[in-house]
Image 1 (cartoon, helix red, strand yellow):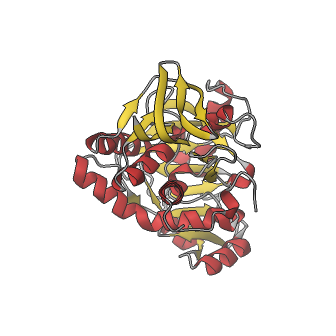
Image 2 (cartoon, rainbow, N blue to C red):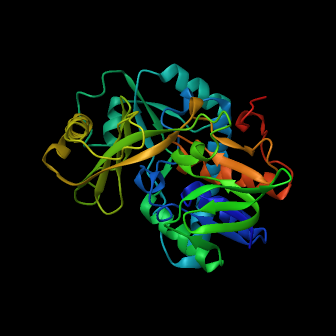
Image 3 (cartoon, rainbow, N blue to C red):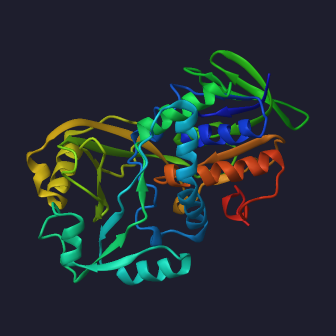
Amino acid sequence: MSDILIIGGGIIGMLTARELSLAGMKVSIIDQGQAGHESSWAGGGIISPLYPWRYSDAVSVLARWSQSYYPELIEEMLSETGLDAELIKNGLLVISAEQEAAVKWSKAWQANLQLIDKKEVFELEPELSAQLVTHDKAIWMPEVRQVRNPRLVKTLRQYLMQRNVNFIEQTEVTGFLTGAGKVLGVTSSAGDFKADKVLIAGGAWSANLLKDKDISVKPVKGQMILYKTNPGTVKRITLSEDRYVIPRRDGRVLVGSTTEHSGFDKSTTLTAREELAKQAARIIPCLHDAQVEHHWAGLRPGSTDGIPYICSVPGIEGLYLNAGHFRNGVVLGPASAHLAADLILNRPLSFDLAPYRIEKV
């Protein structure tokens, strides 16, 4: 029997497991597939919301905490496991007319955001399309980091296994064991599992377990492509017209992503592949001749305004929720896990809980 059972082994579930394990709890993670192989694996790994000025304070406060914590987190896991999640600070270059909103946001949040001229833009990213920069200035956020998602979830899983966190994989949760208004565990395709507390961190699937609650978490498909280039060909994370280009350390370049409301369908389409390739060449022309090495899709846990649910579930003592991070699971993950752990462990809360409740206050 576990002190807590976490439903969902994505980055949110595993980061929360880390917090609770470090606090001395006996933790089990149950996942319908393999831990870390859904949207946590599929995303881009930019440690910043795209166009952060478009989001509410509820998102910005979690993002800022996580951004400052990531170097410590990655270093700790590297030291413990020997695995490198490839945290890189190569900045975010945004080609956008939303400069006034960006500057206003940066002042409010004391973020390092600069408006730079065309000469500076091409010094930062020589491979950028000359036709792309149609405004006098572009937005440059030099402190933005990225992490390589598949390596991050692999590292997290190894770290947790070394801390004796129990992984129950290929097992679908079908319901909850309850008694006297309190959670006692879960029912599953592999039988019952008992625990003193249960946390739902099932990403896009989280609402399926709470059909009687008003949980606005729905799957939103994102398709992406990966190019193989020489290391250093593309230097900066670049964002233009809701499409981004992310250069990895080994020369691979990730381009994404679509936003599709098609239920739990994870299939890829030729139409999306062609559109992403077109956008890649629009932003970085040399990618036109590069080899597309991989094309995949993931299901984001879409939520209202991208604000996650981090709260206890009304009516069932000991049942908690940490889900609905939409496109920002990586950047919001550490702070979300920290707040969820505060709640579960009855610690002083690190952030105001009100924006993240099922019943918004």
